[in-house]
Each structure stands twice: as structure tokens, then as C-alpha cells.
Length: 289
Ligand SMILES: [Zn+2]
Image (tube, rainbow, N blue to C red; front, side, top):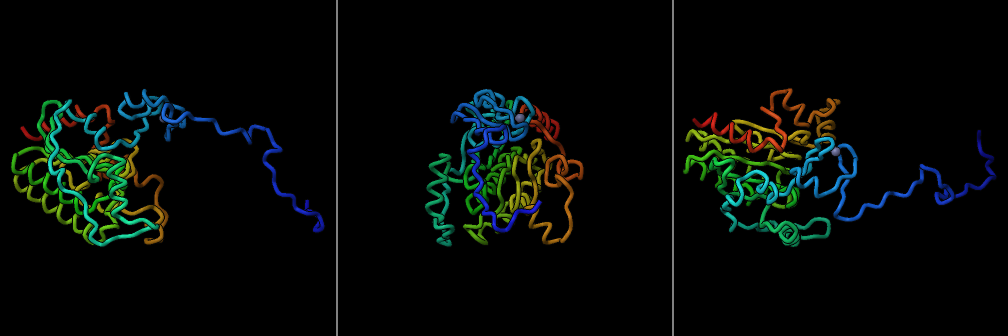
């Protein structure tokens, strides 16, 4: 049915409707409850935290900051931080979206309490001594700049020097654009350090958490002797849209997920967070004795 041209179009007034389609959004008290991105259920935040930041209803694995991850993964109080003194610089005096990178550094440090987007050190996992690195996705989405590359490379060197298994928990938005080509150089640096660890007969286990992308996935994240992924993690190099536009082809559904990569041989196993410690302990024993 067409409208007579003379009839004026009235602006749509949503307040005139009270049916279910216009139900007011449910209020969520800040901090106590959260909505699961997997099953959309409302979850009591404390219960999720006690469940290692995994949804008790559907098993969705939420992202975890580096400090919390270390608590979850290592024997209590065993983590001794190394290379914490290496802090970020702003060699390009980078400015983006009205903000300087120097300001952004201060903001990320205040938010996370960490000087950079990776924590490195020595820790025990069920009694096994390891060189452990944990990326912090909350620090500028875990991007890899000069400091991340340097700390990760030094961690691999320490692992080689002390004959320790190296374990990295990766979560990253990729190479850090604010540091330009210096970020890209970290791919080569970390890979070369891993080569030396490999020559020394060392073991490297890489754990891929949501998301592991860009220059990180294209370097040390994907170079593990064993590559473990968390369930449902996004793992890939470039974004789906960029890829589709570049190769001018339709991409398969879910092709950047842990499950797809396991099926195609890019990761060795998918391990739920609750089993990660015992799986690591088993792997270390199996592969080092
Ligand atoms: Zn859920």
C-alpha cells in the first residue's frame, strides 16, 4: 500500500509502544554480574572468577589479564619476575586519534599495574620449574612492541642458559603500530632466540589464548614444539575482512578459531583452562625425561 504523497511522514516515536519489542534494557549492577558472551546468561562475577574466568554454564573462556593468569597457572607465590626493568619508549613520537603514545603508555600502566604488555619470569607449575612469559591482553590489547620482543627473547635465552622449559601464554592484537618497523623486527628477534633455544635442545610450549593475531601469531606464538590453544580462541594473522578483500575469496566459517586450526594441524591440542596446569606438567615430564 503506498502512502499519498501529500501525507506528511511522522517521526517514529518509540515511547508510544509498550510491547515486548520495546522492553527496557535490564539493569545490570556494575561489578556484581556479567553477561556471558557465549550463552548470554547472566553470571555472578564471583562464581566466574572462582571458575578460572570460564562460564560455568557453557564453558566460554573469558579473557584473563597477565597477573591473574599467573595466579591461575603457577604454584602459589612461585613466580619471580624477570626483566621488569625494561620499560617502553616512544621512538617515533607517535600520535593517533588525538592521543600521544606516551600518554597511552601511562594510561595502560595505570590500568594494569604492568610496565608493558608481557610479564616474564621463572615459576613453578605443579613443581616443575619453567621460564614463563604471559602476555597481557589488557595492556594495549597485548600488542608486541620493542619491550615485548626484548623480554620474550631474553626469556628464551634464560631458558636455554638454565635448561628450563619455556612456556608462553600468548594473547595479542599483533605488532604494535605505535612503534612502526621496530615492532616488526621483534618477530625476527624472538624467532632467532627460539632457534637458539631449540639448538640447545630446549623445550618450548606455546599456549594461545583469545585472541592471538598479527605479528605475534606470525612469530613465537606459532613456533612452539607443542602448541596448545584455549577453546574458542580467535587465532589468525590478519582480520577476516582484510583477508577476504586481499585474496578475493570467501573464507570458511570459523576459520580463525582454535577448533578449525586443530582440525587443520596448526595447533596440537585444545586444553580447557581447568586442565591447563596438569596438562603442562604432564607434557614437561613426557618431553624432558
Ligand atoms: Zn556462558
